[in-house]
Length: 463
Image (cartoon, rainbow, N blue to C red):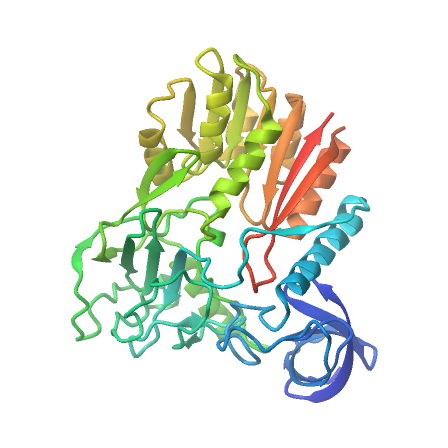
């Protein structure tokens, strides 16, 4: 089969697919086309063809537009651009409809469930919602965003996602080449900027610390040794992420990309540029103080909304037992502990030590809440204490999986609240619960990442 990379052709688009594109067919092959909408006729250019039954393309000209199309609100993410705002060319209602269609299709195909899905907005707008941003820095010291499915950096900060003031002055400064910037605007409105040292890619011969390769004065307070790579379980939602791959990469390029990804998640030096480095957040009247590089929900309204749903579904009686798995700093665990009271028990488990420490400090007035560190899959397999009435799980993008769900189902909680940000892994996990005898009795889906293809789903499962 010939390589279609760079070819252009007209194509009529069908339904949305999971990943921010619409699906069409051309000469017998499936084509995943970004920057398009269902029903549109577009001229597409193939951007990636690894052979096989499908390829990827960008819509570079709209020949017959959908009535849901609007001028793109993000100037950075168009054809050939960044991967930040997949759906900025659709009305907010149409964006939510696309996400609802993807969630429904995944539940039907993977979990065997036919269910009408409504994706609810978290606020009235589509821009200015992100309070956590992670920006790569290019070789010239300019902060930017990763090109879609690439480690290339686009030095353009006009994406509308960040809250007002988050990026003020960032483009005007020069940063350490190869570093990452973590920017957090906390619940008090304070901005914290932390520069993460460039990753050390030891497996391809770059076994050295590249700090100070720029002569620019970056205004660091430090350096101070941190564990920025020790991300909490939901670090995938904390900010813009690097995209993977280039069209048909060779072996050497694949090795470089793999080395870069591995190094980016290793422990890295941190330099505090602005703020205290300790972000203050509030949920349900409770105050948390956590590392600016630690996880907090990206959308300014998400933590409170999810917490309210979890508390409503948990409905625990005083004296009950509950688990909060993949607990982060204990936002959900706090709500559970308030319900069960001093005669009850809440056990929360989180793998990131920094999150455990920050959570324990915030929840010190709830001694019946036990927030411990460790791998969830190991903890559920080894725990021998009293069985919970309710279990809450908020796993990483890959989901909880068979081993964890099997162990949770084996202790037979009355209710399980499961949270997921990836429709495919969420549907797989729902199917595993169903196979274990649980039924999906309620589902809420939230547009927690406006203008992107991402969606947050919360499920209540009962026996």
